[in-house]
Image 1 (cartoon, rainbow, N blue to C red):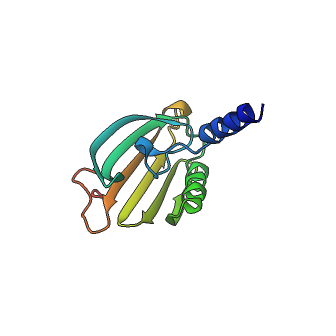
Image 2: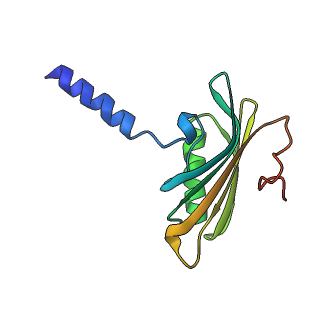
Length: 136
């Protein structure tokens, strides 16, 4: 009986972990589904570069960004932001030699079609051409 309870506890803990991008230490936007990954690079098991597009229900972009910030801080990330509004929010995380930028947008016509773009770059690298960070 103790063995069964131990296995159930481990299973529940694994299922309740916050979702991450491609099994990395980078938090995924809660409630969104990844639809596209571009230019993904890993180094020593860490996600070092890539642009990730997710879609799904975004009713409050700022609140969803605040949830990401809380998860990130609990996992050793330095957080700048979030800032923005219910419709459009931005957030930046740094850890080790990486910068992760989030842009979360609500779709005013169809809240189920909200979008998040997450861009991962090494600290010493310029953003990839065409990435949201490069177009600012």
